[in-house]
Length: 323
Ligand SMILES: NC(=O)c1ccc[n+]([C@@H]2O[C@H](COP(=O)([O-])OP(=O)(O)OC[C@H]3O[C@@H](n4cnc5c(N)ncnc54)[C@H](OP(=O)(O)O)[C@@H]3O)[C@@H](O)[C@H]2O)c1
Image (cartoon, rainbow, N blue to C red; front, side, top):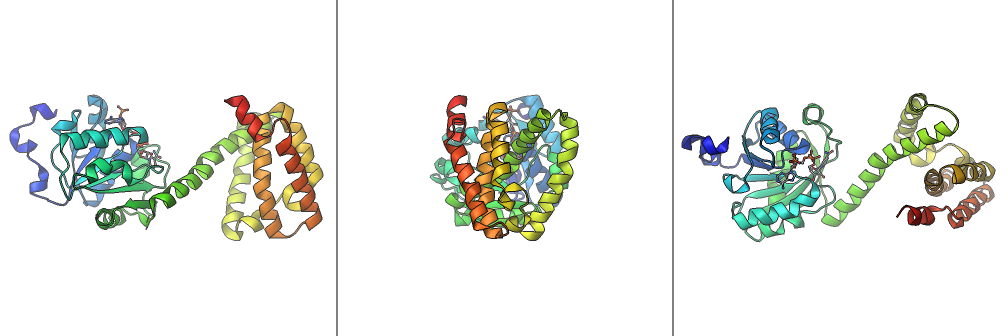
């Protein structure tokens, strides 16, 4: 426990290893992942790890294999790198706390890992001379160790001030990341696309399983049907591009089937009907690029989809009902 550390061990490691000390604020999955990678690759020495609960924070330190667990922000020692890996909503309050405690010095680099937030959320620290950046690993981190094992080649979106990025980019490349620098505006768009596909796919799987259940197919059997279908679709999209990969009633310009399936879903599961309608609008854009179905047939599909949007259970109505 930090309160009982002998004075010598409490001395900042930075004096011996000026550029490589790393303090971690938020001892969760991503904090442990980056701490672990820094230790494995020897690019930074994990020093203090801040959490709210002592035993959880100590468990994180044990997992990282380096550092000291602390629960009081004011007991954190100076470090050249500060990593804020709390949930997004806690980043701004912690930046304010850090600024108030005057712990971060001019020239220190402060990073957070949110995908949706830009580095500007760390502005109170920048005002004190810190260099600020955000680094978003495009990875679903369910547990730190598995994510660290498979981190090599992970895409990381970097955003922030140029001086911070000059430190952060080589550091993350050393950890095995593929990095690209984005503006704050680009980063929000990039993250929106990532959320749409990663989290949207999970929701789409659920919509599919619920629709299979309407046919009496149990969820585990439905999953067994969907898995090879999804893998094949992914492989086609990757190999041929989205437009050429599209199959099904919209690609064929079969307005009758689209209308029949929307009519089936609307009373049984209006939320799934709304998903079917919205995704078919985007599929219609692809079908036009693909150019296999006739212009007239695709126009008929467009008409069915427009009518569905106007119908009682179209997306705006669903949204209103669920609010
Ligand atoms: N997980 C992912 O797949 C992923 C991928 C890319 C980026 N990110 C980003 O990485 C960041 C962290 O996400 P995560 O998944 O690692 O979250 P997480 O596993 O929930 O960990 C967050 C940690 O922050 C701690 N914490 C919360 N409030 C705190 C406070 N005021 N002071 C100190 N510690 C505090 C929590 O402690 P308690 O245990 O006390 O709650 C928890 O240990 C987020 O910005 C997220 O958007 C996550």
